[in-house]
Length: 183
View 1: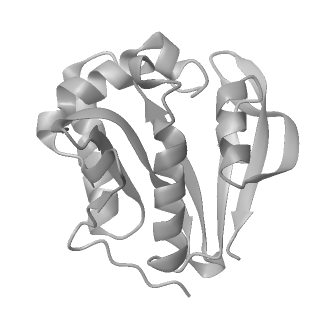
View 2 (view 1 turned 120 degrees about the vertical axis):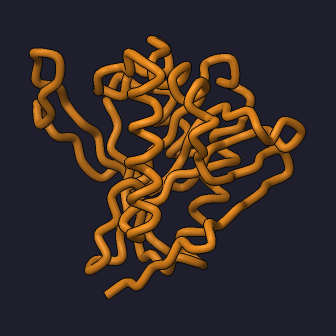
């Protein structure tokens, strides 16, 4: 079975980005991200309604990191390391199968700049080479064409289309599953 430890928290970088631990001081930016209608459009979860909910989410993420059950990074630009522009992580890790599900978000003003492609490539490298995952899954709303394009660009393969398998906001919606297997 996969053995993980996220202590000390793994800080990662790319040419333009810094991936660091989420902190309570990020609550304003997390609230902006998780309450933004454009950022939340395809997440199929209720938007945050307060800064307190953002603090609760950060606390929940911190607990998952401390128990080595999941990990989420704050994404920041290297030149502005204290300003969260998005999040990325492996929020559902299935240790007995060496598999995790990736999740990611960016504030809309950072869309279409290649940041998420850069982030996914870096985090997948970390997942395969440091976490020793065998495969990574992504589950997206089929209407999210931008996310699908990013996943395909980063090497994921579309594996499944599930009809009405997710219930949100009074409706059943479809899901598309992508995966990437360690080479």
